[in-house]
Length: 189
Image 1 (cartoon, rainbow, N blue to C red):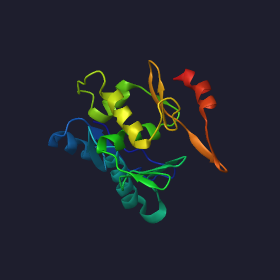
Image 2 (cartoon, rainbow, N blue to C red; image 1 turned 30 degrees about the horizontal axis):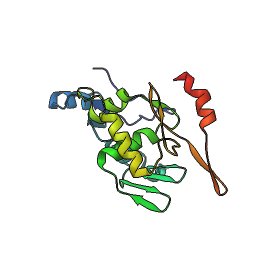
Image 3 (spheres, rainbow, N blue to C red; image 1 turned 135 degrees about the horizontal axis):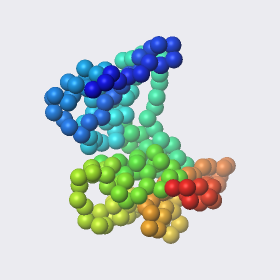
Image 4 (cartoon, helix red, strand yellow; image 1 turned 60 degrees about the vertical axis):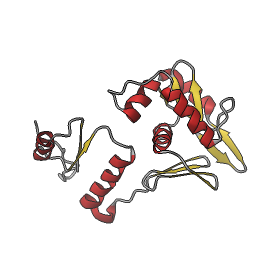
């Protein structure tokens, strides 16, 4: 293995988190020997790499780097580390799988996420699923978000391709969706 962790501008070494599918000791020790500061074994919950990244940044840079792991889109707030989701003033009680699915979609607003990407990210590449497992989880998440399939505020179905989290913004007292811009860019996916 070659040395990892390139130097930043000014010669300071950048902190590195190594990702591996093998959790054996030999692989981990080799990654540390090559310069990794932390190791994360796949599959993992989406909150774990973020928590490890924050800890690594805190150790490396002290208080110079601050980061609040909250995704705010429209009236939806997703706090990854505290595992809370708020829609307006209401806190939603989601399962771990629903939280992970929502985070995956919301972290990629406007981008079409295929069913295969969702399966690989949430269940792992080796998971053999029945054909409707992703659709069923999307349906459950929509119900929790009170998101209408016919006029979605958050999750749109892209027929034959997957799902897209809609960008929303508040303009005064009116909430608008940036779907026209998304439709123009979705042909690039």
